Image 1 (tube, rainbow, N blue to C red):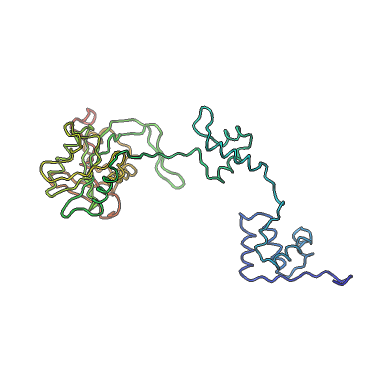
Image 2 (tube, one colour):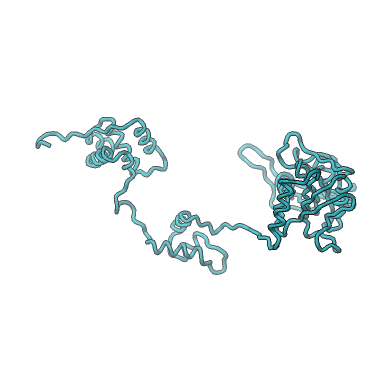
Length: 377
């Protein structure tokens, strides 16, 4: 440069995609402020403004405008994200201190408690709770969460698993595959006060306390081929009730049946092998799954749908437990009248062929032979 001549700014040429990328970085909420400022300086330089004009308009030194003009010309727009070594905020705690906090989270417990919280760990380590929270998020640690599990200890777990899954995927010819199980201790809970209905901007409400009106046990059989369910409710949960349900089911089945059963608790006293699923009228082959493996039984999935969509949030009074309701107790799409007399009348809603199977409201109508006095009125 010749002494006495004015300092000229070098032009910055950017493609349309580079300009769009710089504008996006400058306007994004997650972009650091120093990076957003650099993007605005480069965009102003690409618009043809001089370093002095940029410095005056952006409130920075003209050397900063010239610095980023030159870096983008030589290294491209990605250089606006680079931070030189030694610049920026320095870490308050060294790596050894951070490693000690993570090790304490993984291998120790607070006295008298089962897990750490941000505040208890911060007090024990002498740091702030925000520091603990950031380190836990960085290492994906969640001491406040826990998951349940159960492993089957059956030595023949693999063989039984293969048998049950084989019935689902490759059933025998001319056989009816039924998944039989019971849902015990269904409580007839009625809330102490009426809740508020669903409205815009507000979910439905119900009181936290309830009045318990009794329990019932639902025995159900799911047809694997058609995805239909037939069931019966009993007031007691014993092997006698289970055998009664199987005999009633067997009277309606005139063909050979393969039964995947989960009744390890309802075996007949004289049958230690769990052959209580056998019925005298038809050829029944039982495929019992292992202990702690009820998830293999497909009817358990239907029980989950029943609990989620009909039982958990629905108030059930004592009359629903002990008598036959005149109107369906279950929501639409979950109940159809299908009395279990003679051959099982499997019912499925035409509007929901792929959803959960249906059960008759007079099969699972929660009735017994001994209604209380107040229901007889």
